[in-house]
Length: 250
Image (cartoon, rainbow, N blue to C red):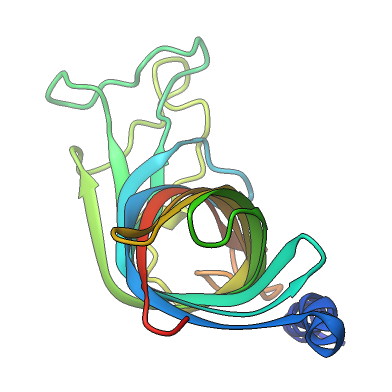
């Protein structure tokens, strides 16, 4: 089995494991029929897991878009839903350019070398959403997890030098620079996202959610075969976001 096929199998298995408890609760829980829609916005902190390793800081970007959720059951104290989003997100990586003494590397103009790459995606996650607490008036705590796909829309590079300083002693301690000149080869991304958060519901104002989420990419942005330079180049994203929902059905 190839590495790509193995990742797809793991993704399908994860989806199946998430779906099993929801399916079982649907048979014995107390029925609900609440469909909610709304919007979300927040910040995404991203890095790319390169192998060979590239020294990085967190790339800070924006994420936001459309949210929906369908609540179908309550099993004892657990409120069971399926939720999804369609978002625009700015991902990428920002390089941490220092010398062997952990000092900034200086370019030919006397400024600190800086390099960042911003990749804009349409992202579509789908979650199994489980909550405990108040359903319609008050607070509840929730966890959610599920698959996510993404399609790259644009690619922007920001740097302040023509050639990286790789001189011994004064140049970069991490000399991996091939990623700076490579085109993105795989514009389709996929992986697993999971988060936890708090929700406040008010019958007049709607539902307000605050969530922390982590996304682990199973795909690579560059080629990963034996003839390619990087064996791995997948996303790791930390997302902090707020969501507002209104119930269309109750």
